[in-house]
Amino acid sequence: MSSRGSFSGQAGFVVAAAGSAIGLSNIWRFPYLAGQHGGAVFLIIYMICIFLFCFPVMVGEIAMGRAARLNAYGCYTKLGNKHWGLVGLAGVIIGIIILSYYNVVAGWALGYFVEITFGSLLQKDDYEGFFGSFVNNVAANSIYSFIFLAVTAFSVAGGIQKGIERANAVLMPALLIILLILIGYSLTLPSAMAGVRFYLVPDFSEITAQTVFEALKLSFFTLSLGVGGLMTYGSYLRKEDNIIQSSAVVTWADTVIAFLAGLMIFPLVFSAGKSPAEGPALVFIVMPEIFKEMPEVAAHLIGGAFFLLLCSAALPSCISLLELPVAYFVDEKKMARKKVVWILALVIFILGIPSMLSFGVIPSLNKLWFYNDKEFLTLVADVTDISLTAGGCLMCIFIRNKWKMSNFNAELAFGNSNFTRSFARKYINFTISYVCPILLALLTALVIFDKVYNVF
Ligand code: TRP
View 1 (cartoon, rainbow, N blue to C red):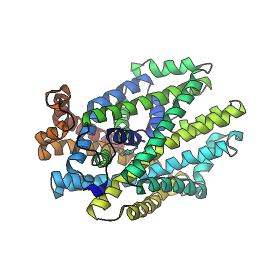
View 2 (view 1 turned 90 degrees about the vertical axis):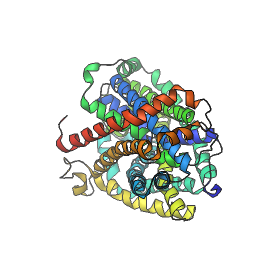
View 3 (view 1 turned 180 degrees about the vertical axis):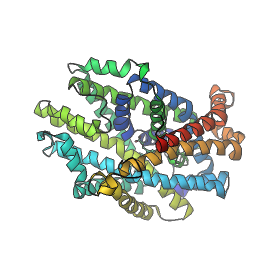
View 4 (view 1 turned 90 degrees about the horizontal axis):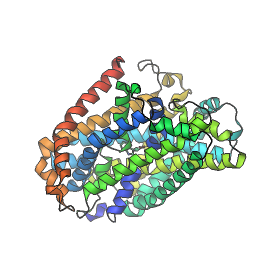
């Protein structure tokens, strides 16, 4: 199956998987959720979710991908049967839906980058009003999200090594450099330490059921788990590479970047005397207000760098989200990669239009009567979030009951000769067999119950 392509080696795989994991959720969602849910407390619960549930699920996804050497649907059918294939197929469809709204938000980031660097964003007085009119400007938004999707498609069309691996090799170092420069700036601001303290000293009175739910959903999303994105990347991993080690590096890289994003944002927020609990508006309303107060040159440079950072985080994630359905059509329908890529990009762009229109242009999408008057985009994000934990739960059940632990362990032993005797084997076997399926089922059910009845 050499025609499917493969990563050049473990490093190429790790960078691409880390690129998939590190995305808008690390730089946009993690800081605002941490800001709303007691700072350090949220960080602690988030890390427990990451290491307890997510790490084993990531290992499971990559192992399934490499064992079957197929797309998500193909993995479930080859290692199981046609019925289980539906779980993989559902993952492919959910991936398409995630990309349709994710790309809209990535388009906002691109738009803000352009407006702050070359436009008049820094001369505005009312950033809430600006954000409102910006997201309502459908023509501009279509162009920005179209450009973003086109760059994504172009990278995926290049194939695994020449497209995906190469794009990540440029974007990930760029992301790290921009982030470190911004942290350096932010920590030298006058009240930086107040922000650091809020972020790092836990206040346990802030823990609620919501804190746990948000942390769980975010941890699955941020590691790109539950729909088979990493399963697809795993299918391009060589047999001699070490899955446990790769997963550990990806998990840590993602966690460290989210942590660093908080370390960049909270000192900025506190120095400007703003509230850390502004929610989704934190990045698009509060940050521009902060940049505006800076000396002019700094404002353009730091503000521009910040939105460029968002773009460079979002692009590799979009690439992995697009590769998920592309691999399905290439493997199962024997279609040519380039053709599938552009057709899917067009379909995804069209599917994203209701999300784009859900901020005022069409009032019925702005306030869904059946969903607490929230926007369409929020509904799509909530439904897909839940699908991730449900997908992770089903995958654990699949590995244990259908594929069998012995096959799973045999796959993990390739490229890792110490695996059979390692603690990692005991830990992963125990969590995949018992802890993850039970707790994920329970938490998924509770989150759905909460969404429907608003009890917690
Ligand atoms: N992990 C990315 C982020 O944090 C988003 C993402 C990429 C994703 N691929 C995925 C989410 C697959 C779920 C499934 O922004």
